[in-house]
Image 1 (tube, one colour):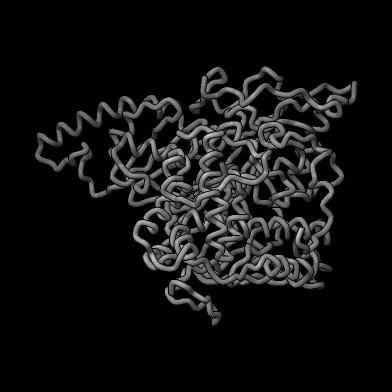
Image 2: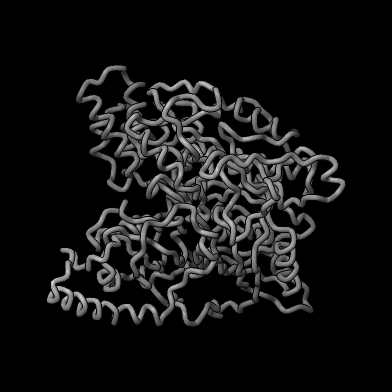
Length: 619
């Protein structure tokens, strides 16, 4: 398990860097508070895509698991004596090779959890499927399917930071992006607000919703922002990508362990992949994979020089990783357009906005806006007309913005022009993402898996071709069908390798309304109220310790009306559709960075408040 140290936490980007600036509840002054002080402050449960039911691991089911494991052992012995076929791993041959189970974890990312489960069960990570990736610094519950696992072995697992239950055979794997959404129980600490202020904030969020930004988790916590990697990838600047990933950043303020910085500086000076590979720690998996590929190219004296070797190294990375970077860039463009849409046109539909057929709003019982050209055919959005605005046919919750791609339609007003201008200034084309020839078939197959966050690291979910190589809480919405030939919609894609993976694009709602939002006031030392029959990690559990001491509330927050009782903590419970971020939802009413101000600046000093317009220059 990789532990995130202080160096990585300090690399988290600010809201202004991710273009997260607008709020719908402009008349409501956000309350101060601290999110994710300890893992149990952020509880996430998956909602099944089939019926929207909540995935929970109940205490009685967990207790029954141990007894069931003993019964399974007895049943297998009887089956052997009866001459029935029993696999070498102790699983009765029932015709099904997939086992679904509920995974309840704390302070553990989904990918790390799956890797450890695979080790204990003698499987590979690719044998597991999930609907989405959940946050690491949280308590999360989701369903997982393991191919080739033994129900008895799953029931017998005893892990410190994970609990497994409800194991049973199913017909096949889970589909990435197949969740209806997530249910959140989030404790906000150190508020020092009145109950009336708390109720007004909850009502504003309940009735007006929030701008459906991609959260900070979407853009990574490493020394280089993932949207910058995506921009260089889409521009096919492969040598620059190698330097961005492997070399140390120039800014001395970026915290980094001394041995890691020394290894990165050594490569920057020598570009000796073999020597650098010996210096890089094993936890730096992407860097080591690139260096290993570069070293192999040097040893084989491959033709084409440094540029060709860099291209080969980048294309050797999993398609899921490269797709993650590309979609991080398009997510940044979405955030920028969402901010400008609210700033220029306000919180009401205007002529030129886009709405989907039937104006289907996202709810926890319905997946996000469909992707273009995926599965059941294209769903072209409709333009809002002046007549629609006059008749009040749509609300802001019906409006969608494009996640740019080869087949999307842009709004017919200034925001559509801004999208195109921003991409043109960055030198990014909308056509495709280059893949290796060996990936062509896999890319086409993966396109039909559905799109997956949020958060998340997520607050929600993340999709990928298989188990993604990196994550956050967000979803990769922009991935869609791939073409075997480098032509899309009559446009030549300029394929170097003869194969292109087409990012057709999709649509995402501008505004989302939380479903079943409840809020209750808690005392500072009061336990977080969760369903009593569900498994949970106690406050005193060593795995459920705070990141750091809770800082005092700002002076402005302490100045509550003297005649009203003070609320120190509050529990917000609500559901969001897959792909929406709970931290983004709460920023409508809470002024805080995840973890209580990780950027080290008070709200008044954040640059986001001063962002007014876009200027294209070289600064």
